[in-house]
Length: 92
Image (cartoon, rainbow, N blue to C red; front, side, top):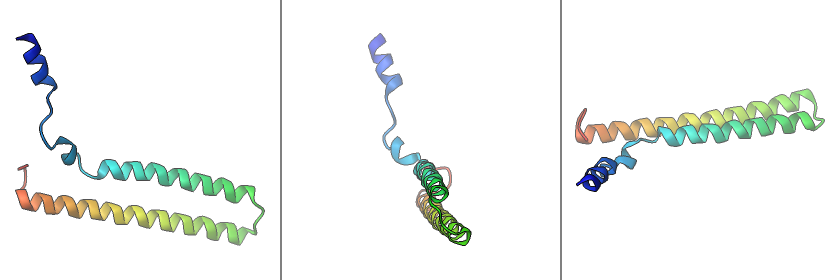
């Protein structure tokens, strides 16, 4: 009887992994993008480019990475909105 209670307490609801949402993935991508930006920043400092070119490279990397995060976040929010619309608010 005791093992049965333990197995029931550890059981997960079906579909739990799919309900966590995509924001966990967005956080992971944010971490990767931060590492990329730091690496590019160090690379720009290590190379001897003119100041305007360093600024241009850093600005381009920031713009591309920020745009990527914005597009991914919008897609996750719209996907959650569609899912909520299918099931109704508060229903899963």
